[in-house]
Length: 142
Image 1 (cartoon, rainbow, N blue to C red):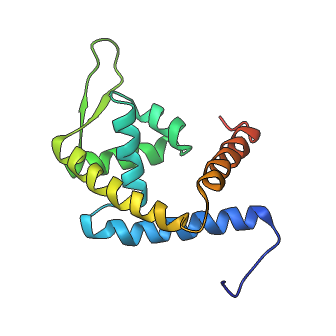
Image 2 (cartoon, one colour):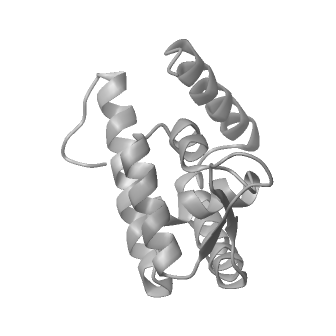
Image 3 (cartoon, one colour):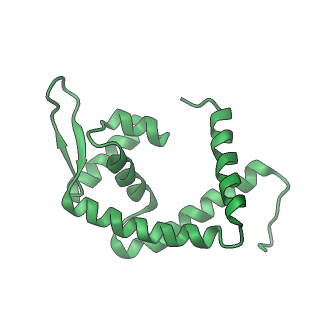
């Protein structure tokens, strides 16, 4: 156990998130991705054609942060941006290289998830996920 413990549930959620992001950043670094970049690729994969505004809503980040991330992914040739059939908003898609890196990243994330939950039963893992989803919903964050 870490020398710092807290009875504050919100501090512990924050700490778990920070530790997980740090571990994932280290694990993803050899393939040239950060946790945020992997997350953005995952969002685009799950929502092909999404816009920067869509990404900001899904990821709970500012439109500026989403735009910066998309620009970096585009420069790295991991995504392509296309004008829609109607309107002006650019649609975002993964390139072949983006899909390849996402698959590699998914494998790393799966291994990290297994380690994160290694001393949880299957029922505890399911319950934990439900608790997180309910907590997010309780915040009614839009």
